Image 1 (spheres, rainbow, N blue to C red):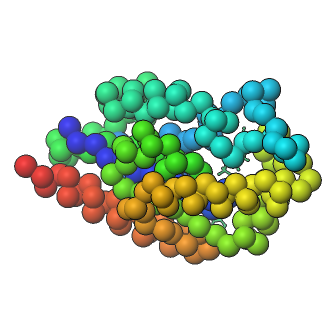
Image 2 (image 1 turned 135 degrees about the vertical axis):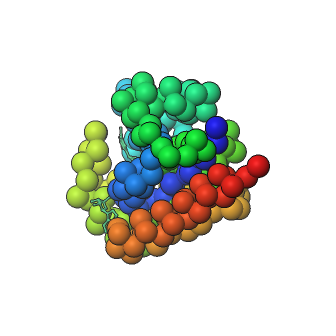
Length: 201
Ligand SMILES: Nc1ncnc2c1ncn2[C@@H]1O[C@H](COP(=O)(O)OP(=O)(O)O)[C@@H](O)[C@H]1O
Ligand SMILES: O=C(O)c1ccc[n+]([C@@H]2O[C@H](COP(=O)([O-])O)[C@@H](O)[C@H]2O)c1
């Protein structure tokens, strides 16, 4: 049995969830683990000196739970899929490749997780597009006034700087490109990886 772990990282509202979901639909034996699902309860997230809730740090996430979920997939991907109703399709080849898509805004900043990726992608968009897309999204809790400029953007810059000091092998994707174009490019890349694994030994 072969496995492939793909990291779809990127800026907030860069298009990670959209691209990951579309990729998952095109790749059999794949599933998604999303970092957004592991945010701590608001009561556990402290505020910074400006009064902004510190959501854009690894400490705001239950990374231990996320790693447990990923390790459960690594232990037995087929069982993992079955438990989630994602039963692998019968395939003409017995050389199945199980693909885990991990998506999130801080996936490459957590070293134990970063170490697991076979391929890393990072969706980036300019400041104004990021701010506009973010303003039409409602988080729980919603962004307070001034949150983007006062907290989210400076934290993105800090986290990105940290990421670049940890990781070297990242494929940067232009999140301004049409969704279909991004999907076609990523899908081609992933299929190439799957074929390479199938051909091994
Ligand atoms: N390639 C794209 N071009 C234009 N809009 C996009 C693109 N990808 C995503 N979006 C839009 O941007 C917003 C954020 O997308 P989403 O996938 O939720 O981002 P993320 O998971 O990175 O926060 C959504 O409204 C989505 O429809
Ligand atoms: O999902 C939540 O519980 C949540 C609560 C408050 C804030 N967030 C925001 O979620 C952002 C990361 O998710 P995303 O999908 O925008 O990449 C991050 O910038 C946080 O500020 C997310």
